[in-house]
Image (cartoon, rainbow, N blue to C red):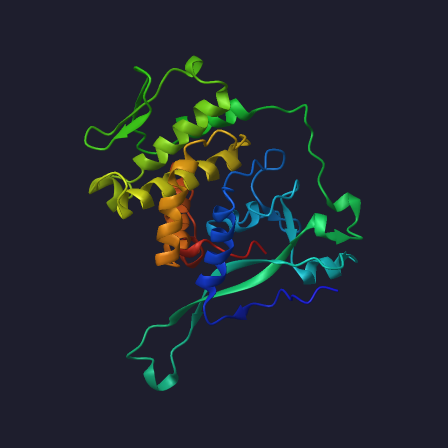
Amino acid sequence: MATQTDKPTVKTDVFTIVNNRIIEQLEKGSIPWRQPWRELGPPRNLITGRPYRGINVLLLASLGYTSNLFLTLKQINELGGKVKKGEHGCPIVFWSQKAAKPEEEEKQDPKRILRYYSVFNVEQCIGIPEERIPVYDKSLNEQIKSCEDVVANMPLKPKIQHKGDEAFYHPEKDYINMPKLVAFDDSEAYYSTLYHEMVHSTGHKKRLNREGVMNFDTYGSDKYSEEELIAQVGACFLAFHTGCSMNHFANDVAYIDGWLKRLKADKRFLLFAASKAQRAVDYILNQTIMDTTESEAGEAAAI
């Protein structure tokens, strides 16, 4: 019987809970953000259809299920289903505001608290009505068109040129250089690489003005490591969005040691890097998030 509840729970240190889950995957040599989620898009709530965001995408993607549909325990019960014996939920996080005490209202702003609750993948459940689970029509294949739409519709898009065999973003001249499409093993590899550089470009001062781009530090530095993580995670978010496979991020392995070092030294590192990655993706997709408390830490609840 499942012991988790979906009731938001205050935890002394939610950052540690999140951090430890990701560190565990990296120490195994597994990249938590490399799951394809190819058939049904990014992880989302089965009932509301809303996708999870920010750090919650990584937490749920690292579980390795073939389905990306999740529910709270309350939703499972309402559908007449049950959690399989021995299964455990995955925490998702969100920011909540705690009002100041009446006597301190004029002196103190509401306090922001990181909270979490658990969700379960549909594969962890029994008794969920089949008609409630969407069926993907594999005859529909618009990955490339969806990728081109993302590139074409980016606001203040930098110039994209195709010269030579290097992929990079030039922040001073604000352009992206890419090898030609035919130079890649397949189209998804091309777009995965282009997404990475597009996320870097959002750091330009006329866009999101991210320090890791505008004040570039030496290769291998903490600032460089963070910016590379933002670009890789953001590229993965875009791949989730457009239905691309995540099997093309070979360079991730080269950064594992650096990321592990930062994660062990700063338990907030990944959560806030994922938040910046989500903000970059929102910019590229020209999406305005009305609830800033969700976008700042990775959104939590898709319910």
